[in-house]
Image (cartoon, rainbow over the protein chains, first blue to last red):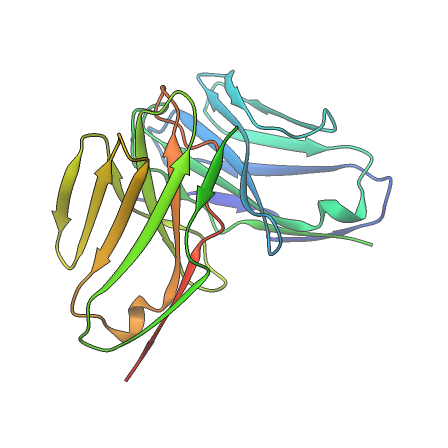
Length: 114
Length: 110
């Protein structure tokens, strides 16, 4: 079956702009989590959605937001971009939320803010 | 507060055994994840330990001691393709990994 897909794969934006990233989970998976990965900070959890509800949220400013649709597809939005937002953004899907369910990661969206 | 500590780098030779340690301090602990991440690729799930003890899965095994806040990943019969970063991540009570270690970069040489 198809894996997790993320679009776009690469993105270049300028400071102050906003960006929307998309994630399509594996068919049948209802949980989607978003992560930011940078060389300095490593992998950091942004938020998790399950059945269109945000269940967990990491320590990121309110400029970072997300949502999940009824078909489990998810989007994350970053407003007023800063240079420090340059990172690889990964989404991961699993059958259910938490309880150690195996997560499958997408290839990520590489965001560069200039 | 929450803290995860794992070695930054490790080196080993093909065929050898290597143990990657992870110590953690976190609240609301349910279990611990291990992920493998090759350079330029997304992480892939290796294991999730909930109970104390060793769980074996082929060449990879993972150990957990909840009372000590300690886990390790044991890789046997190392192969060149095992060169990657290994991330440990404690899960909260709902089983979600909210924080990750910085990762241990393992280099396997012939």
